[in-house]
Image (cartoon, rainbow, N blue to C red; front, side, top):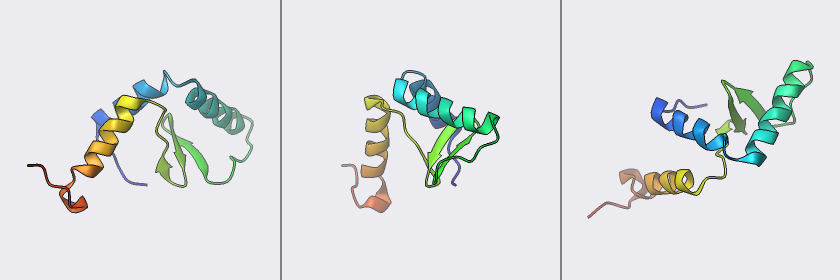
Length: 83
């Protein structure tokens, strides 16, 4: 797993609190952990964040998703330079 900037993580945490589906899934993982059971394949929870296939699971939040898309689109390595 890669590291993320603290501000980005705070944004993900805030968005996750408004996504009922995300909260339900995270709650299920917490229950499994509390009961000493294995997580479903490819899922994990760490520091209050959910990961799928070692990738940070992003809550359903249009603003956050747009920020991520813009970051990928505007990246110089992506070949999309700002004018």
